[in-house]
Image (cartoon, rainbow, N blue to C red; front, side, top):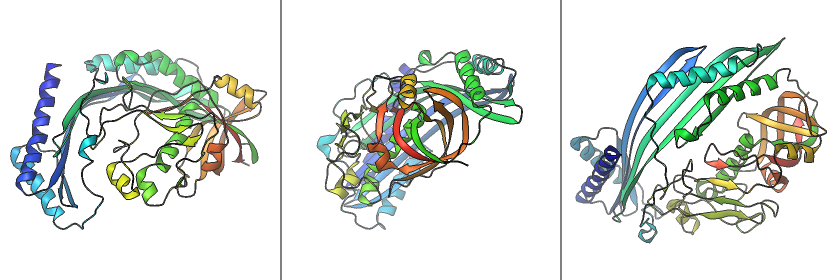
Length: 444
């Protein structure tokens, strides 16, 4: 831990020096960010080591302002000469850019004045042999599950640790360490003429919160076996359940539609919807950037603005956009501390688990995988390839593949009927499964 503290102090001094150099060259304001990461990635396939990769990356970027003219440059060379050259390059770029009255640092009174420990740093000092053994165990659990598991794409373990430091000429300089670990497995199953592939993974800030390797492999195998014998269904309109890990993508679409860049460009189907109902009354969606051990937690955003918890949707009504200082100025508003994106988005769950949602739906489609990118955030039109299971009487009847689900996101959001308590917690967005009003399912 002492090494980490010393490294952070060194990076903060680099940022301090860059800002000083920018001031010497006449910049009226400047900001700089630096990252330093290292990690281990191991993959085993068919019981043998396939890849072992040690990573070490670093980079620093400087943005300078001459009034409202902006220049940016970056480097991975931390030598004093390279850093001076980088600042000089940013200043030269700024001299040729056009004045933009919305550019500049975030307001000084919004800077984070304290940087709480969010419990994000739990490095895993795992040896390569141990990492290989965990991957082999994980894959073995999947392959031994059933003779119909005939091949494997392997199991992979990744562990990363890093430091992020940001500073600007308001006098703010802050940083924090973080870690991230994951274990995944993907296998192939075959039954008659049907061949299917599926996967599972676990991820966490601390290695102690990862699922056991055997459990990850077994889940990957079970998901693959469940898909064998998949077939198409006829085109129809029917209720749809987006399983939790798929429902995450719907919230990503919401994030994209209420992000500042889409709004000031008039390229969002939720333009001018602040204060308007966009979901049913029971829906509450919040952002909690300071969630301890959260996958996307941060004490400040990419501009040094202190992060804070807020409701994006309450009672189905859109309460807040997601803005950095530039997009906020374009819209005549104030930053929401979302420079760099959303951090720990959480939709409040209902009382039903996935089985309860299936019973509530009765007959319809359970979507477990989405393909393609047929989402138009300008109009809200939605059309994506899908796979999953046909449900009847609340029970799985058979797997389904080669279908397309179509609708409009605005109607889909208002048609949300229930959110399950089977919460997906492995990423920056937490949600249960979504039971939706009937949608168009295109098949045979």
